[in-house]
Length: 67
Image (cartoon, rainbow, N blue to C red; front, side, top):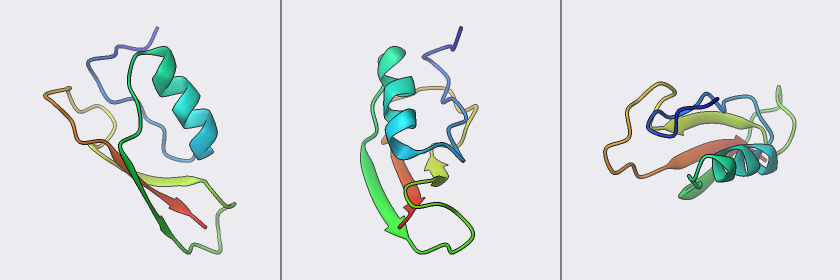
């Protein structure tokens, strides 16, 4: 079971899969910025803010994903 009070590790997931995972625990992606990374498939999450393992204290959730 994923603890909704802690940011899960979604780095490396497809952005749509990450959305579904977060939705299951009552969280959602705030903003998405895209950057070019030729080593990753399109829409793969590169980083998150907050980082995985961070306790929820009114997060502003944002992710960077490949385009």
